Amino acid sequence: QIYALSKSGRFDYMVIEASGISEPSQIASAFNEDHSHEADHGHHADHDHSAPDLGTHAVLDTCCTVVSAAEFFENFESVTPGSNKESWPRLMVEQIEYANVIIVNKADLVSKAQLAQIEKHVCVLNPSAKVITAQNSSINVSEVVNTGLYDASSFKSIVDMVEELELGDTTTSDCCAESIARGEKACCSKKSRTIKTFLSEVILGSATLPKTRHETRFGITSFCYKARRPFNPGRLMKFVDKYFVVVDSKEEEVDGDDRDDDPQLEEWIKGQQAEAKSKQALRAKDLGVVLRSKGFIWTAHSHDLMGTLGSAGNTLTITSDGTWHCLDARVYDDDCDREVQRKLKKDFKAPWGDRRQEIVFIGLEMKHKAIQEALDDCLLDDDEFSLGLDGWKATMGDMFLFKEARNNGSDSDEEDAMEDW
Image (cartoon, rainbow, N blue to C red):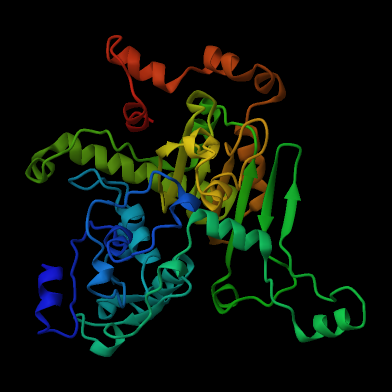
């Protein structure tokens, strides 16, 4: 339809209204002609290479997300899965993160204090977006049409966020330029701060750079946790279950009509909500206000799978998009493009390749030392680590074998294991 309408020449602009459970990044990818960046973010990208690139027929101008102020905190703190098993908090966060313009609608249904709190949360999740408040979705159309705001490269992946924290500000200030011209060292330290333990490191932003408007106004902080040994799956899940409600994408789908008539389900939901509030209070006390986390994880029982951990509000999911880059045949193919190989091998470190922990946390007044200590406790200790891969499988299991056993000995494949995380 988009192709036909663009070819007709009858229209200047087109507004695509996606469903409420759509992922804007997936829609936007259909307009991006250049997919050369995929090696940076995982070779198991979801882009359908057989489909025509809409970017040759139409230009994506703006990504806009509409947020209901009246239901914002209810949705953000919800632990009840949708009818298609989707996690509302994660879906809402992803829609906010991948937007150039965010309309906070129904602003008249909340107080000024509540509206300010909503704006704070939105700016934490997407500090670069333009935020507009509205009633009855009434806005000036020029705010969302022909803005020229969309730029695919401006939306940060996990890899981008880590690199940004590590590099700090690479520009040279006037005072530093003068110092360098005199043959002296740069007078300002703009690099990130790294806090190391025997097992891990936490990368914080620069302490000397001026704070951004959102850091000053809202107290936003972010940091990255990195480690090069696997998590003990049991201890990791103990940590996760202590502070978050884990969303299981494999739970049986519940029909919308049944949800209203099932008293047991209603009781379960109330129990989940009470549990979420309790965990939220404990999380804030022990770790600070963690609004969002996302990153790669390596667990001893899923050695070859690149785990993806993500939390939004009270809920957390652990999934996988595929195997680590060190298992990609292109890395070892002499005929492969050298630039592609360079990107795939960028995070390699002997002997485990790119297997690692790399989790970005975003929130308010977070206690990075407490989070680092808690996650360090989840890593394999020296005795466990010395067992090696065969020892890990013998003592902690193998996800591929778990799946095979449940299939009564039938063949198991990588995709089955990923679904069974």
